Length: 304
Image 1 (cartoon, helix red, strand yellow):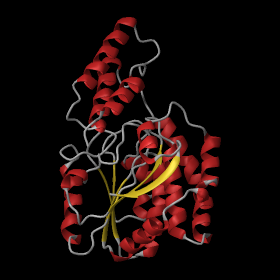
Image 2 (cartoon, rainbow, N blue to C red):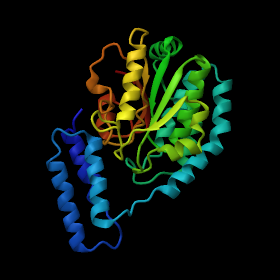
Image 3 (tube, rainbow, N blue to C red):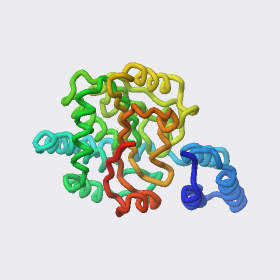
């Protein structure tokens, strides 16, 4: 799905003042002019592609001034500290899969591309309240059946710390179907606080997934023609091997911003009616709050 007018407005709003302290007035004017030019010439592009151009513009004019390394380390460690608590909650719940999905949704909260600031206390509160997130029982039942019958699954991650709840959910999926082959695809290069191979290694994702690779890009998303051939081959190999076995592809769109839309994932343009694509996310973008008729930070589970 290409960028729409709502996302264009959001891109300008979020990026116009995203320049470093100490930038000269001349540089600021040049930056803001180019921000508007990027959006003006964005027709036909997806929102993640536009976001990548914004990131490249900042690096071109100001250098690499937005380093999220310490922030990512903080939240990865914080969520790993919470991991035993969440794991126990999943294992002692009446519905292990539902509880794991609820945590995967809450994990989407820490997203510096969507929010001006995040709060550790609010994160803990959201984890405590995860059990209250409503999930359609029929959709959850269908999802469980898909897991039981599938032999391969592709899981695209989004943010750091969230990748800890991804690991918990993937472990739960493996408990349901021990023979399920799971490939996890993270960002190929650092962008915002999105999860990379370094983050996946830090949370020991390889303990629950058979394969963990990067998508080869530094954009906050996955777009056909832009992700690496290795990532695309992984997708296509899964499609070929599961074509006649009720194929299942899992993608949590861990929602944070107008940058992300339900249809920017790499499967959107494949037009494969036999694919089963699921989305789990927190609704943070105003456009999607209107689309689903919910308040901000409402957990959403849906199927394409």
